[in-house]
Amino acid sequence: MAGTSHIALDLLKRAHPPETALAIFTEKVLHKPLHLRPSSPDPNSQDARARRRLQRLRKQEKIRRRQRPKPLSAKEKRITGIYEIPKESQKYAIYVPLYRMWLGYIWEILGMGKGKQSWVTAQGAGGKIASADFHGSKLTVVRSTCVSLVGLKGIVVRDTKFTFQIITEKNELKSISRLFPPAKHRPRAYKDLAIPKNHTIFEFHIPQPDAIAEGTDITLNKDISDEDLGVNALVFQIHGSSFEYRAVDRATKKFKQRPLPEL
Image (cartoon, helix red, strand yellow):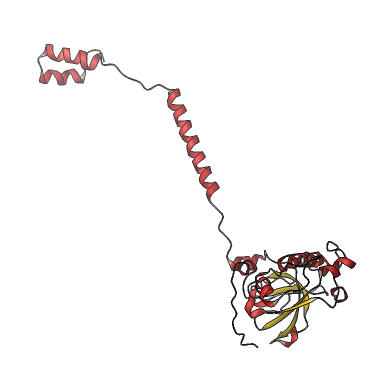
């Protein structure tokens, strides 16, 4: 409405004379500049925001790379069966090359070979045999508190802390039921026959390198029979109760001579 005065001018007239009120109104209210925010953001501020976001994303990616996945527990490993040998891989012939490779390994640590010594002593070979890895060795059970295990023979496919898991010439994998999950989680491929190290004596033969080299090649897949071992083969017996360590732990362990109650 044209005849209506501004409310701010009426309030100023109550506190100041008319001339002073009109001057204040004209300077402070009527001619006061109005600052409006631009509709588009400042390019400089936009670039700074993008840089901060990029740095934040790079930092998060770096943290994710440093984070390692949580390892599986022993129970989860048993249930998932990550250490299980598939049924189609439970063939004796598959592990014969592993046995021949183990022979080369045991000859090397005992200092045997073509043109080298053909004998060892208990003092010199005892510590080496105790620290050796038996994956691929051919073991025979000669004494055990469980008489049904005596005479069992095969190639070691897994050397655990308390057991030797072997595969026989009949393609039977002898596994340990007490180290596996309950029956509802246990794979069908495994037997219930237990072959613990405790209270068991194992025997293995090491043929002379010269005798093997004359008839067969160490790289062939042919198995080494008892006739190939020869009469000069070295025969060792180990007490499983003294080998209740993982293979990786035995390699660095210092064994001491102690009396064996089993004897």
